[in-house]
Structure formats: C-alpha cells, structure tokens
Length: 485
Image (cartoon, rainbow, N blue to C red; front, side):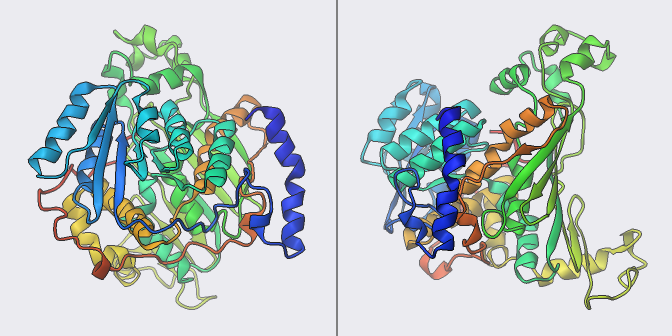
C-alpha cells in the first residue's frame, strides 16, 4: 500500500464511524474487501497442522514445544538451511511422530504456504521476512502466526490488516510477553478492578548490549537495521501487556506519540569513547541507532504510556511493566504492588517494616500476587515452568492459541493489535526525526475499537486438552530474558 492509499483510508474513515453511529453492523463496512477481524472466530480445527518457517533457535524451540501438544501435527518444516531442516526432521523421527514435508531455500516458504497440508504457518524468521511470510500464508488461506515485530513500517501494517480482513484468516503476532506470569497477574488485577481505572503505564525492552561489542558483525540482520534506521525497532515486548491492561483497540486506542533518543552508537564511537574502540570500531561507526530511545504515547481517552528501548549499552534486563490505576499501582522488575483497600485511605497505610522501598511491603506484594494469580498460571504454571520457553510464557501463549483454534474461539490478540504495536517502529522514527514532534498513530480498526469488548480473564479447559505428553522430555531452555527474534 502506498502513501496515497493510506491517506485515502484516513480520509474515508468517517464512513465507518458514521455506520457505527447509525447502528449499522461493522461487517457491512468495507474492511479490506472483507469484514472486520475484531472478535473473529474461524471454523474449528479438530487437528492443527502447522508449517514452520524458520527453524533456527527460536523456531526449533517452538517446533519441539508444539509437537507434544494434543491434536497438533508438525506438518511442514522450512528454512534456508538444509541442516536446520534435517535436524528438526530427525527430532520428529526420534519422537516417533509423523514425518513433516520439508521445504528448503530462500523462497521455499511460498510453496509451503500454498500447500494444502497445513492450516497454520508459524514464522520465526529475521524481521524483514515476517510480513512477507504472513502475507503469503493468508493468501494461501492459512492462519498466520508471526514473530515480533510483525512488520517494521506502517504500510506493512496496513497490508497485513487488509489481507487478514479479505482472506478471513487470523494474523496474530507471537507476543509471548503478554503471557508472562507477572503480566497475566497484572491483567487479572486490572480485569477485576483491583487497581481502579488505569491511567498511566510504563513499558520497555531494556537488554544489556555489551556482548554485541565482541561480535564481529554486531548481530546479523539486526545490525543491518541499526545501520539504516533510528527509533524504537523493538516496541512490542513491553508495550503489548500494557496495551491489554488499558484495553487498547477494545474501548480505547493509541492517538499520538512523541519520541526522542540519545546520540547514535556511531556518534559515540566517533567521539572516541574508549569502551567502543577496538577491532569492531569501524563497524559500529556505521550505526545510526541511538543508545537509548524514549517515547510517550497518549491514548484517545487521555491515558499515557512511557515506552523505552535500550539494547546497545549495559542495562539490567527489564520490560518495566508498570501500570498505575486510580486505586493502586503494579510495578515490576522487581515486583511491587500497592493497593488501596478502601478508596480514599491515607497514602502511608500500607507501609511495613519489611518494605524494600519506602512505601511498599514485600509481604503485602506476595499476598496480592497469590490472591490474584491468573487462572491459567494457577492451572498450568507448574507444567509451563517445566517446559520452559522464557519461564513458561512461550508454552502458555502457544497453548492458548491452539486451544482457541480447536474450540472455535477468538484469539487473545488480533491483527489490529499486531498493527498498532508494530507500527511504532516507523512512528517513533518519524517523531525522532522531527525533534520529538507528535506523530499520529493510525487507527487500524477504523473505529471498531469503540465497540469491541476488552480481553477477558481467559484460560483453557484442561478436560479438553490432554497435557500428559507435554514436558516429558524436560525443559526446552533455561529461564531467562526474552531474546530478539
């Protein structure tokens, strides 16, 4: 989609608003030649046949995890590396699972997406291939599940939205951090009204970058992006959960954003910072990306989100994960919760001798954590921790979308979430280029956010999902920070 097309959509969005105001059904409005995907339910799949595109480290973990799920088949494996494909095919044979059809080569994913032996395409490729694989999958009438960010520009977001609407295929971003234990704890507290009305959030992806200085090429496809762009190129891990707490695209939406970032990594090297000198100095001089990015997002209803990114300099790992409500606050890294039992109570009522910050009680926090633990983590947290995958969040994410497809339920995250979160790669870069000036964030729902219901307290019915095979081979990976795909 080109700029003129995007401007046309923006200029005609009043038609969707007018239809809603007049009481017309949203599916009668032209949505990408189809119908809106908000709340969309696909026909039930008794068995979910998955084609994996990209089976490096991340894709291999996903394949092995999902291969143990009931009524799930690893039907196809695709990668540019013949070794990677053969390694995963050998794994299936070792586990006495049916063989998968294999696809090898830079564009082999296109053949996979057209093959009628898969229902779902699961993409774990470098960033720039996320959207092409997802688009090819949907055009082949397959549901697309794609790693983060789903695409790096606004036009790409629109194309994914319109293709999903036209083909009536799910397009979900695999934002595993929405399924972390503390993220789902916060979501549960928000849904139960424990924190009151949410008004402010803080999100981020703060990941120590000192190891990049020892890598000759600075991180492969990421390095290529760092040399070409500025802005927040990895916004979704921290932002996704905050957006869910605040009912973004389900009662509210992002309105506009202001973004700034520090001097670029290249500037630091050229300035003679000794810690950036050495064998890779000439390479890092090419980086345009800033050492630290900070953005402020305002929603239509007047809520504010601080969004930070730092992956180029040393920093303790954090997604920040803070949500402020009118009657309480939830703060992560480390976890601290402060809740007024009675609205209007004094500000120091919860102070305790065992507090690790002036006004927060460790005991109180642990009590609230146990009281409001999300039902999914109550029911399957032990299995999730055993399987692993970033502490179990990967397992719970996959368990949930498979369960939804098998039982004819809407997914927890839709293509509008994918677009609203991913488009910030370009929006932050535009704002940064204009000295932090505000930049509008597109409404990919075209007004449907006004009537969409918030995500509920969702779980799985274990009576319908036999987990006896899951986790028998032990953990997939050590519990640790989320790595970039």
